[in-house]
Image (cartoon, rainbow, N blue to C red; front, side):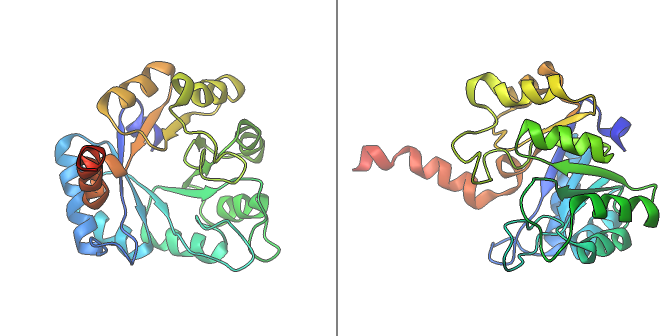
Length: 229
């Protein structure tokens, strides 16, 4: 899969239950629109959405399952339950939270990687990380690539964003690991997308700037908030 998305755009087509576009059918059409626009891959949440997307487009899919567990902040593909659902979905790559935070129950990220490799070795594995330390740990564990997805979304990185200081975090991750690095997280413009690739990202995942019309609308409306006040 990595060779297919190399140097191009992956579009994240997701809508949670509380969001207006929550529907596997709608996400499949969103994926179709992304394909027709030139996307090389799709990132999607849930077995149902992935199955619907695979019926609509032939693009490779990075699959996740978002599910909250009591006692843990990890909610992206957190346990074997989510891994099993994704293996049944037909996705080419599974992304999981690879931060160093406590996982649900007694699970470890190492045990999940091992389980994936034994159960379905042809499925590639993406590590969603928030720090350079986590990226290095993911490489040691045998992930196929790392993604900056969670930078800015963990308690110990919430003070910064991927694009700050001219993508300083992305640059540091690229220096420290040999794995392909996927840029993801608040990439809001075509110029930011291009800059990530120029810096050496293998691919870029863009979601909110393309597939979340509620948030896109709000950004337009907020421009005038100060003037109206």
